[in-house]
Length: 293
Image (cartoon, rainbow, N blue to C red):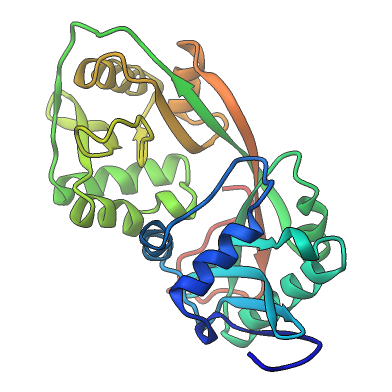
């Protein structure tokens, strides 16, 4: 870019390498370290269905110094990353960037936009000023359980898993990065492994794990129809991969799995706040999520 002064432009004006470097600068010194190479950045874009033409980059005197990534699914959007490089913070650029992003949402006829922000992050005030409403509390949970003797679990195919995901969504709505398109992408493109728990002839709980040998316990998704099924899922996970310390991100407070994990001694690592910006009333055919769902 050759412009002088401040400018906010679509992220499509930058290469993947430039965006990756900008992302890493924007998240320097963040509450949770987040640094991507180009491969992981590309995966982040794919999982979040990030639309770079809807996303925005802010530059000062021709140098990119802030990034706002926006995912899009129909009439809904998701803030998949937002930050200002350390060298340009506390100059009012974040306010200009979020205002430009919300204007882009309006121009694209986005009805609702969502984000998650760590509870103690001062950016909460910035998002409120931009019109986002604090919707609900989410938790990052960690636990490790002893191997359990019960092994009533299977490896369901996506076609069998999707109806259960939908049923669990009706009980406790997942965040954007745990919605079905993201889960399916992990199963199909990343060799993620699904674990299912059955009650009689009904699939009642599931987890989506990283591939065997991955060495990490970060669950990509997990849910249960009720607290009893959630306990059975925790046992199945302990049996499937003994001695693993599991981590689950974006779990809504009060969900069946949250209650079961807490009862079994899960550790609360981070608390996040989901926020929503309503821009348009949705038509009857579009998926609608009430602010408190």
